[in-house]
Amino acid sequence: MGHDTKFEKRTNMSESYKIVDDGLYFVTFSVVGWLDVFTRRSYQDIIVNSIKFCQDKKSLKLYCYCIMPSHVHFIAASESKNLGNILKSMKSFTAIEIMDAINNNPQESRKELFMHQFKYYGQKKSDEGNQFWKHDNHPFFLESKEMIDQKVNYILNNPVEAGFVNEPHEWRLSSANPRSPIKTLEL
Image 1 (cartoon, rainbow, N blue to C red):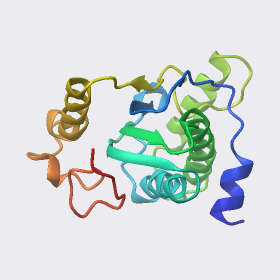
Image 2 (cartoon, one colour; image 1 turned 180 degrees about the vertical axis):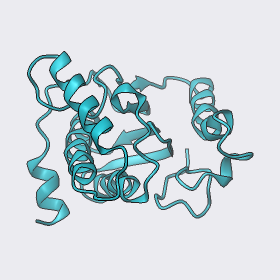
Image 3 (cartoon, one colour; image 1 turned 60 degrees about the vertical axis):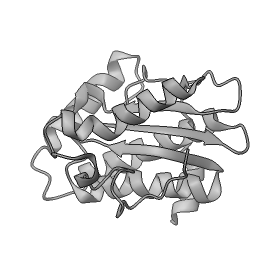
Image 4 (tube, one colour; image 1 turned 60 degrees about the horizontal axis):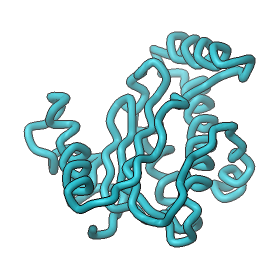
């Protein structure tokens, strides 16, 4: 099944986003239990490809981003004023794809831990089954240049503050890196 078809079929999350206007939003997706899932390239590629798909096919406008081991930050907007639905679809699709990739990866040494935690968090909220992304991370409207600048700084310096790199441009999965796999627009 191609990415387009799989993405369209896996878009029914119960979470709703309160995006009332067009404009820029600071968005964070965090893995349940702050699990360091995005340490393997195969799992990183799922989120990267999903973001690219949303840019190409769903009018996602991405201005700044950083993918950390346990969470993703970005500043985004939507041409179609449909950012809430785009984010909901992206989270739903990536959750299923990443959990499948973990479960089917014979080299994943943390498979039992991850799958146990996904099940634990899924049942904690009801009998949902498994849960990959936390439900309490909602878009934050950026209403001023100062707010935008503060969030850009926060996003790009996240890997530096975490001690992974010395300079923002050294982090591969960041818009600060000129060789980033995801292209962004200028603010």
